[in-house]
Image (cartoon, rainbow, N blue to C red; front, side):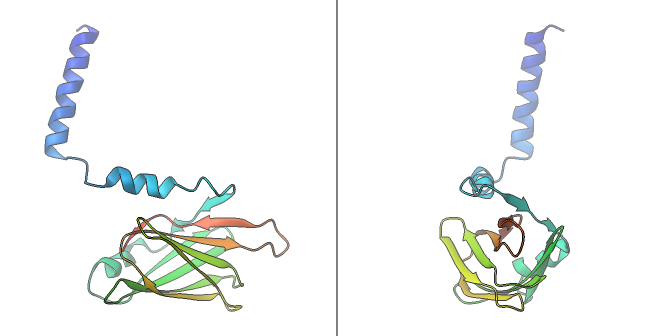
Length: 153
């Protein structure tokens, strides 16, 4: 086979895959939202600790909760569905008065500060593609930001 035949075969395969399993609507926008953190110089991405709990976020079962971790921080977040969106309650461990920002695609962001016990709450978060950022204060270390993977609320 020459390279032209290979290219044609790959084009045909791409067409078959596009018909059988098309890209979900809005996927590119969600990906751009997830990586649009260029204003933050030092961002660490937290990993899912309990991913199966997301079923509660998308279903009528309430509240749903998810835990995220990085080396020295655990973020537990609980979601309670409201008429207009969600109430988010969360806890940071170790605790501290860190700034918590919730980004919602198409809705901007909301911020609050965790109390000395690490608890924070945002009572009125719109539905949509969401990320949680924890802006850790210095406390003897350089300040940095931890971001969760995106959630669809």
